[in-house]
Image 1 (tube, rainbow, N blue to C red):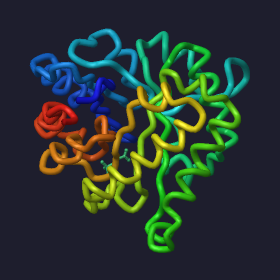
Image 2 (cartoon, rainbow, N blue to C red):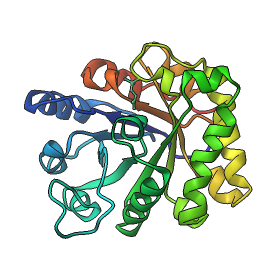
Image 3 (cartoon, protein in one colour):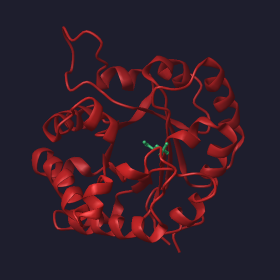
Length: 251
Ligand code: PGA
């Protein structure tokens, strides 16, 4: 059985309202997830409100500014996320990379400000369908991870989480099979172990991409899958709580 932390992370994206905040707060108060940690990443607008009522979950941001402070209208700093009670920050989500043109260099800058504040980065990586069909999966994942490691240094990964999210599986209902996901997770751990074996073995690696209550048990049971980053299903309190309860221990 793995001694790594197990996490179920809700990524609400640009969804949710006061009503969802209320229902989710009361649903999460009541569930028993054993040693697993539940992390909710709402829009910035609901962070402070949820931060004041954290019971049964911890809080994360979906994004952060690469700047620390100053004249950057519309930005939210790592320190502000921390002030609101966040402990995690999602970085490099494929939607940020593709829609908002975030580069590895920018993601590395954000990684640094997050770690500097004592927050935990959740670094997302993943290949497109075309890249998978062209047998480029490992090359793509490796380039995305190494661009960050080479810039911030492996020590900055001490409290980090990596989320493997194949782009073709995000919001599509097409999930990687448990074996496909396990293979990539194992590859990521091996890649990082070249830099630091202890950090690589201790680091949670989450799977994301159409995780739901019907596939989470099988996915989370894989040796190198330490939980999930959940989008659509995290907006349904009953389904999300079922996902949070699907850790069986990585036997
Ligand atoms: P999905 O999104 O669960 O809706 O596929 C996952 C994510 O983008 O983090």
